[in-house]
View 1: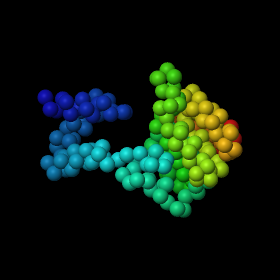
View 2: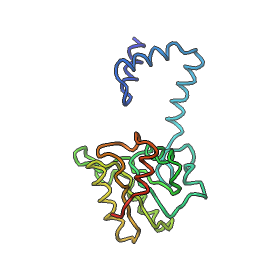
View 3: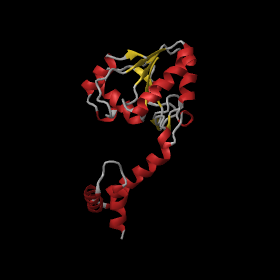
View 4: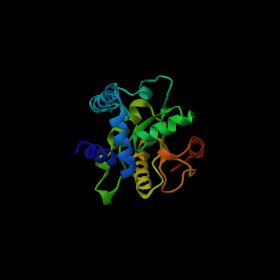
Length: 194
């Protein structure tokens, strides 16, 4: 049945349980046909047009994301994050004016994710090319986040770039995506060298 299949697809989304998925399915069914078609087109268009930025690996529909293309951003500082959602979290603070680098994951041997699956080479290539002076490790304060930050710090050490870590205003085991602006601002302000 199409309604059941629709609800099952919504249930596969992160944070959506069975009841929420059913509510969303019924909501879509109650939409006017043109809105439902527009919704479907938006999903397909996003899948077709959104890709990784050629520089920072953030998601964009242009060759370079808005942040990398902005000449007012401080290119001497790069904030390394796990996912594109983390970039949005930092941008909400309106306090960080440097650039970003998105790893698209963390080192996690238990999950079979090693350094070669992350966008580390691309970051290392940016350091001399862009005259980077500081790299801020803004991975989540989890075992995987710490391991990734320490691994990357060892790679950066020979390049002579200052490597800092966010201060712990974010709870251990928490996600940057859910932190409020004040907590992120304090964590960014109180970062320390690794």
